[in-house]
Length: 447
Image 1 (cartoon, rainbow, N blue to C red):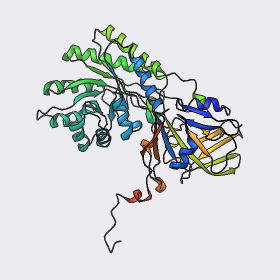
Image 2 (image 1 turned 90 degrees about the vertical axis):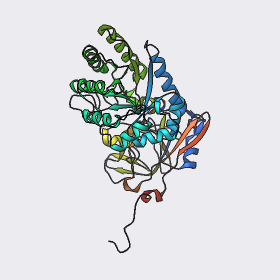
Image 3 (image 1 turned 60 degrees about the vertical axis):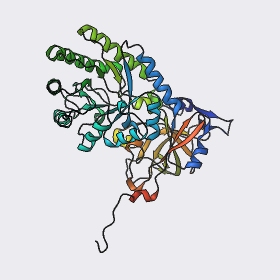
């Protein structure tokens, strides 16, 4: 385990992060904004998103895709985090948005995202989801044969519908947590090659707008060449489909899932551009070897676009010593970030004030919720911190707020958007009344 190195930890924060001020008065800032002042104004826990970091991530993807000699594009995976502001940002940058069901579709459309830029995912889409996809989706990724039959029936009226992609289960397991693997042969996601072949035959027989193949290997993997076997499997299948059905995918989407460093021990970390370049090179060479035309390459990142852009701010409420453990008790944790409990994810942190103080030894960061698993970080070297001080947890932009809950009656935190020297409140903190806003009381006389 690393020691306390504030400079190394700062590299995990958004690209606009700085430590400003002189000795004794140093403070952590984002795009010139004092995080302590923002926390005092908006309360904690508090999430911040730095647009400059988001824009830099998109630019890196686009620069890497320039090496691919055919059409390409980027689809933002909304499951990482979606709100009106994120959807507006994605639309302004020309990104498509991957939506898992009617709820995310509604957010994207409310933000002004056009139908053509919405890709609808999901492994068991409900009738409501499919109805929304047919009206407001530009592309539907078909997960299983039964779903395709349902879609075929809904599209039989001849009305213009979305394009269809078939999700292939390539039988490849990447090196990531078992809960986030999606491409292995036993996965609940997608179809095997035999089912895809039957699906192509059905689409052609019924005149459905079949345009692409999709696969996804997992979330938060770190080795670029892990995608190679899946690309090869998809291209072998494409070659067989061309020979047997005279159909070829106009689009190939290898999903997303590229990991990011969450802790200073994860540095240095291969950049997403290295992964994109590897995918593009393998796809181009594979098509050439099989005599296939190059499809549009549609990348589907979520975490690697948005994770580093986000920061979570917490206030220390109390401290305690339990045996050999120094506990810093925070005002947030499991409710707004379930990843440590769910995946064993490791996080780092910096004090907002005087972050260059010397370490006082390892600390355990715990939230206020009634679960022993409510621990954000374990044995993390930190300075001596007392009640009222603020901690900033970097790489908090993905799969935190999107999986947040109201456990123990907690209220989901406010979200700030930082761009061009300005700060915008893009999601208000939930109020106590929101805890029962959707409830209906029993009639008089009950129970």
